[in-house]
Image 1 (cartoon, one colour):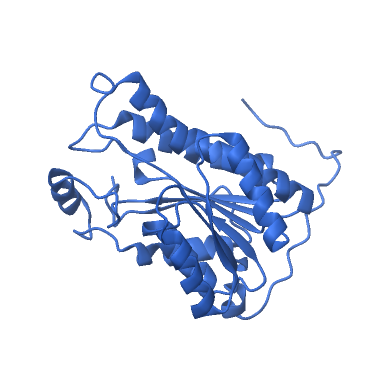
Image 2 (cartoon, rainbow, N blue to C red; image 1 turned 45 degrees about the horizontal axis):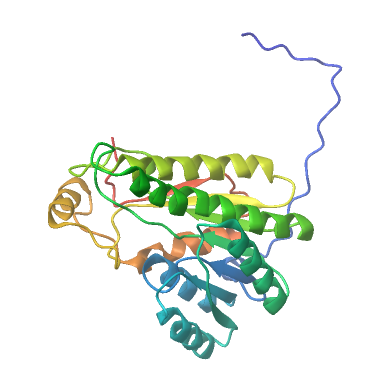
Length: 274
């Protein structure tokens, strides 16, 4: 299809650039902002909470079953002089998510950043898994992100600003070996595309970005044969420490990334290089 230029078409006026500091350290500051982080009792979620709190943000730490989040919220508040509170929230139904977002806004006064980080995996091909197992993973990894995005998006639109960060996976881009996990892979591909689609849909009031980690040393763990393949395939030859992801989430949450939306940061130690 050929494209023609219409000289009589009205000129498109650019939107104004956001006010920015000349200091890169100030651009990375989250002072005065409020963030919700799902799955924040340990692993990537906890590392993100630590990064945000150190950067000055008040943090609402959502957890499903690990009550350690309560003590960790108190620790972050004391260490960094911010407000931090733990909320027990399951993400597999919309109403609890919607209520919890409203509770955070009531407690903190607003919502600037939402990190949709809850996730689960289950190895096995579709001929091995039950239909119930399939739905369980889909409900957490895909529907859970949808519920969080919808509830947070309502607040962002009302405020006229907001920032959604979705934790996806390198598995959105590759077919993992040696263990088959089509359900996990496809749900991560789905939330990656959801994030890109929301970046377009919410263009007037919010930014939406994705972080796609590779193998990270967390409580979820990986079977020995999977780790062996991870070491072989990764350019780095190892798993990541969750702290190695702090910078990516802080970048996307802060004014250092005000021109980034619909971005998918793949941080996998080079595992998925062609």
